[in-house]
Length: 124
Image (cartoon, rainbow, N blue to C red; front, top):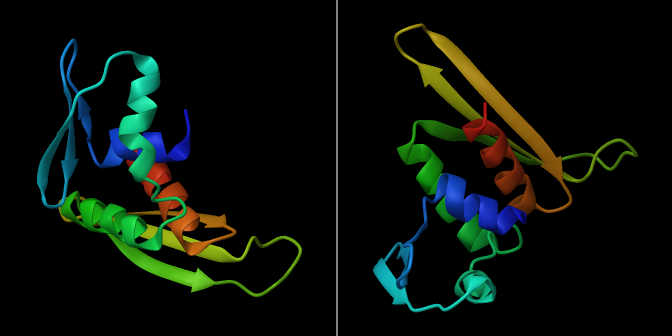
């Protein structure tokens, strides 16, 4: 599964309806797209690329915020052999247990770092 599809399904909760049109939740409401066959599912998601589009990556940040995960940092890293360039960090604070969960990932671009950290957070 590619990362943009994973983000669409696991974080954004975009929905595919069995045997009928596909409904994609977007910030401006619901968009109906009729598809016939598996290959068409890729066409539905052809406009969704948060791993390369920083504006869409921040839609992921907003969705994570609504789930209780805050983007605690997005940093350009010093150029070193063992760093990829950007680091994104999400933090979830459990008020009942007073424990914080922090998940972070590095990537070559800020959009990809956000996506990788978001996926790691929801899978934690």
